[in-house]
Length: 82
Image 1: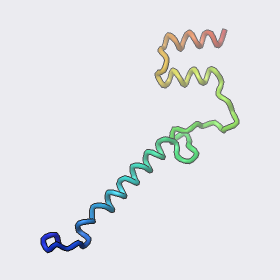
Image 2: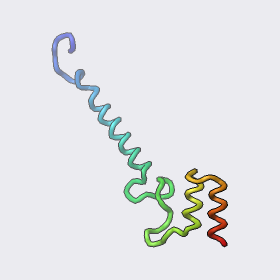
Image 3: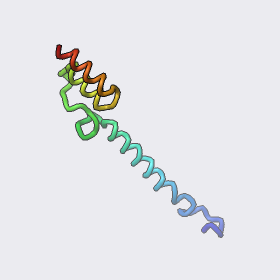
Image 4: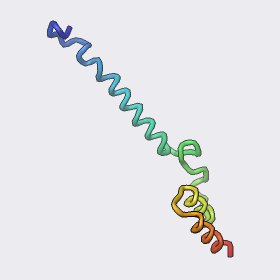
């Protein structure tokens, strides 16, 4: 078809797999960021929306994420407990 100058299926055959691939990537990013409601497996919170995070839980989360060092964590924990 290319050699005959036709504009059949072949010249545009790449666009549908490309659209499908882009949609799949967008879907995967959407799901990894928490999707519609999120959940523990999707990076969302396991708590209900009505419960608040305690200062100790916030401290533990910051330490787990690497936002604070071990020494900072231990000092802040000591301050919270005492």
